[in-house]
Length: 149
Length: 149
DNA sequence: GTTCCTGCAAAGGTTTTGCACCATA
DNA sequence: TATGGTGCAAAACCTTTGCAGGAAC
Image (cartoon, rainbow over all chains, first blue to last red; front, side, top):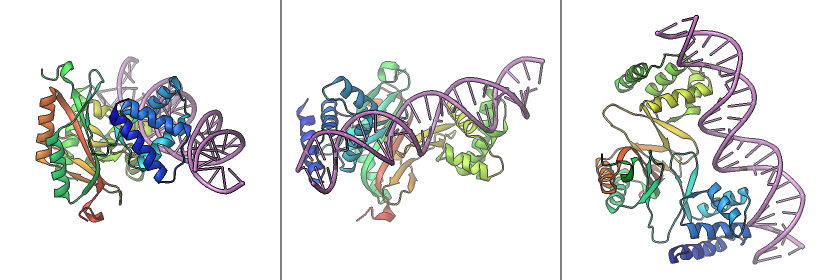
């Protein structure tokens, strides 16, 4: 696991403890797997990886762990339009990325863009809104699938 | 119904006829209701409105009508994160909007923004992608719920 | 008359909930 | 030991599919 994931996991343990949550095996396994994989996975994928890995966890426990992490602001749900909810890690410094879903090969490309973030901040200001989160999902063809044709 | 909705409905009839689809009661009712409401509704809402209105339609027919309209590029699915798929009308001129979901009052605010569109187009160019569609969903507090506090 | 559309019912997939048991603090 | 976490099973929910009957062309 990279240092970024490790730091996120440690913060998650601290934050959940501060909120009065006890430490349980299934939830810790979910936190570790999220930190290892870097997010962007569905509950089913998470459960599957845990089943093949060190610490299997029941489906309900995976969903409940994700719910608690979401309440604590440690993960953020993303919907790519395929009917399954994905979960992204929320980092301390606000760093995050968005997604391009290729409608030909089905792959998901992650990206970040400063100008896009600035445009979103400007829109929020114009609307008089205070943003807690935002999602951008692009649909089309990735560069490998003839995006430039 | 406004002129924009009427024009969209007429185009929908033309486009579906051109694709060899026959005209059926349920599908026409869905088209009329979408044109009347201007989109941004779920399949269940659509079915409910039709039940209370002139022409009830079965759940399956509503979903099938939306599927056909989607294939023809006449509607676009949007996921606001509440587990239900919403459908937006796709207009001839490409005009569209995005959404701010207030996490306090639950309301959805629609907006459009030229700078945001330009930023998205620039990102697509940088990624070498050709976009067919894109979604932006903002989460936070709308101006009425203390966005500016 | 053939083919597609429709509606009911059933199935499918994801997510949530009830409940008994177990682990943590 | 009191409380919260866990896992199984069942339910709830949205969406899709199978099939028989009816409508459009």
